[in-house]
Amino acid sequence: MRYLFAVSPSLPLVLITLLFSACQQDVPDKNPGLDLNQLNVEQIEQVEIIYSDSAIVRVRISGPLMLNHLNASDPFQEFPQGLKVEFFNPFGLVSSVMTANYAVRYPNTGLTYIRNEVVWRSAEHKTLETPELTWDEREKKVFTQKFAVVTTLVDTVYSHGFQAGQDFRDIKLNAIDGSMNVQEGQQPGTGK
Image (cartoon, rainbow, N blue to C red; front, side):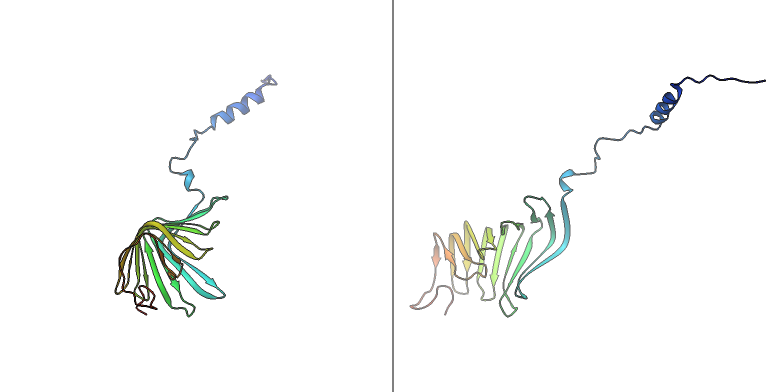
């Protein structure tokens, strides 16, 4: 006995459609565990950044966590758990140390905004405390318009505004209050 089948020309098209529709899988539009805002962010733990000039270390920045935001037009580095900045003199010795609970650095502008319990201590026993400080790497200066307290071994000065070189020399205070022992020919706060 012989069997004869008639095949319609549209049968292969129907079979292919059924084949692909049977393999269809429900794919969600979004991955619920994926945060699109974090795609361009590098997370670096126990970070240390060293800046040098003519092979001499000038600044060392360290912190428990740095988020490196890789935005093409405006990248920035964020220290959400705080940072420690050590400034070095030309002989490689630490001349001052600054700490804070938060900072954000914009490499394109050379500006770093430091806030939340900013404390700077020098090797000469000078201390600056302020809630906020801006570090301008290009101008090599630090400044704030916020309340600041500058303490030396003999003086305490309160100020609404502060500016100094990044080595915290050439200090300029605005709207000061407090006491300073100054003798003729002596620089305030130095004892020299």
